[in-house]
Length: 153
Image 1 (tube, rainbow, N blue to C red):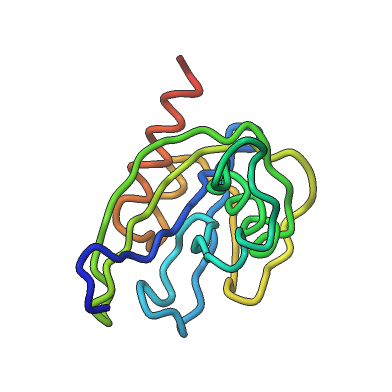
Image 2 (cartoon, rainbow, N blue to C red):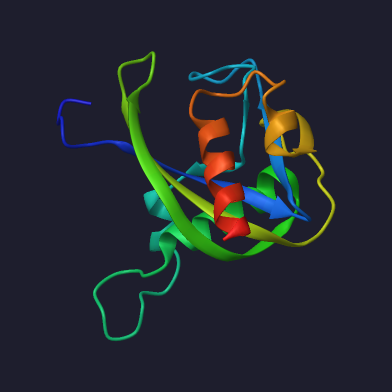
């Protein structure tokens, strides 16, 4: 990428079900963090939102993050989510030197049982304490613990 303002934008979801959190193991083929455990999510892709109708009375598309997150979690885990809420954001540089902006949200499991999509190799529903035993991408445990605190407020 020649323009330093351009980033890949990814969205991730801390999925909560009965006090447990969904974590998934990334394929060893991934460019960033191959074989690590993470939470489901994916990239915002221009051609995907351009194919949907623009929001009435606007020149753009609203709620693309939530729509993308719902689509990606359905693809990666075969489950439905709702109650999507912003948690945090972070940036990093991938090994191939491409900058990534990650928008992290939390949401509730609505329906379905996990079935792995093509990019994940395993999954678990864990408590924050159990999550410590997994080789998580740095920062994911902090996000899970943050959502756990929000749920107890």
